[in-house]
Structures are given as C-alpha cells and as structure tokens.
Image (cartoon, rainbow, N blue to C red; front, side, top):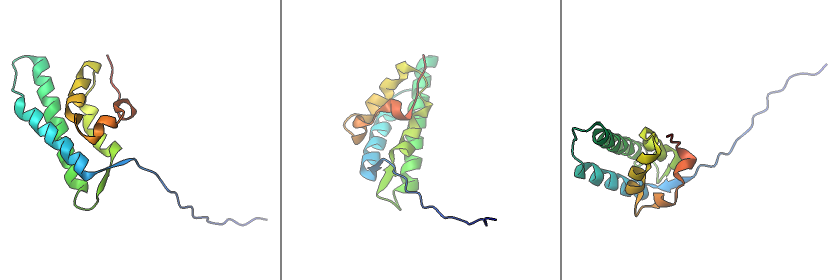
Length: 116
C-alpha cells in the first residue's frame, strides 16, 4: 500500500514589466489629454472625456500603488487602465496617450479587446 506524500513546487512566473518612469510619462500624457479636453453636450464627446479621466485615474492609482516599493510595474497591470475602451474607434485615445513613451511598442490587442 502506498502512502501519500506532500510535494512542494516552486513556480517561477515571468511578467513583462516596465520601469516606473515609463508609467510616469504615460500619466503625464494622460493628464495633458484630460486638461485639453472640455465637457461636451454631445454624448460621444462626453464619453471620450470620461474615458480619458478614468484612464488617468487608473494610471495614477497603479503608479502610486507600486512606485514606492518597486522600480518596475507589470505591463498587464498598467494596461488594465485601458479596459474602459470598448470600441475600435476609441483606440486612438490609447494611441494618443502612449505617443513618445515606452508603451508605443506594446501591442494593445495583447492586453485589451475591442468590439464594433
């Protein structure tokens, strides 16, 4: 008769990460974008403003949750901020925010999905 044995396994998980400076640059772009937007009477324009502010808020929250303790933040964690975008025609907001940052090289569709 066999006896049971407990086996402990150590799992190493690789996370694609980015330096906190890159996330800070992304936050600065988002803050500039929000500052340049205005509230709109049109529902589409207002939705664009709301998305931009939600993205900024999420980026700030993520940045300050990790920046004090770590030099690197998971790209997946940062990309969670863009899950407010739902339609293909909203992706240009992402493109505007990542311009001139390390996130220009990140494949948006690897982390987020959009619909028509």
